[in-house]
Length: 116
Length: 113
Image 1 (spheres, chains in turn green, orange):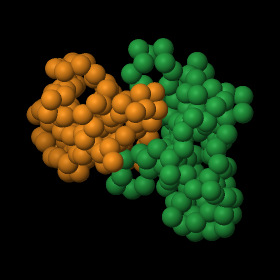
Image 2: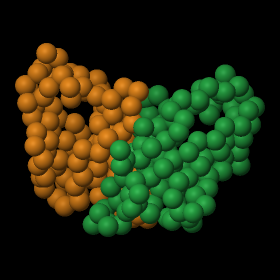
Image 3: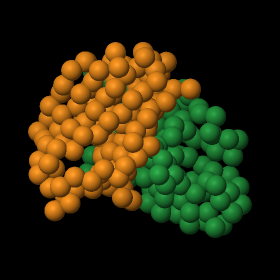
């Protein structure tokens, strides 16, 4: 399978716990995006990497959220001191400028987080 | 605030009919436009993108773009029950040409056998 992969697929945690998600992009893709999606809404942008550099962060990304892409390959998204409002599907997408530069983004299967 | 608007639906069409999904966007300088299909509980799947005014066809799908009216649509011909899903419109805004996409809330399509 050469698509975007995400782990875990589901995570249930108690309020106040820390969680970490992993995303492995399509191998030749240098750009990686994190989005969050809640029921009835479209994906909302969280942050974006080009290679290992984090180029942009949404104001949705509070201080409790941190993302890394240390070697420009896989990325991790950590949420500290989780709150019930963090319950959502966390989506990772990747793309490469080689696709005519129109920024077609391909999504992984997502990680569904439930905070009890 | 850059926005993408879609009718949430549900849009119900009989099998074999044409389904028409619409999207408007607020940023006149937006560059590229995308349609994603999302089945319940799954992640979005890219089905088409368009960046020039006019029509773009791919199999049973046709994307239409009118930049003057800031309007993009997706037509699905010969609709099948397997097309039942939420269709998300996404826009690549000028200020982040390689950055994040802005998504609408999606239109839920139901194709009745």
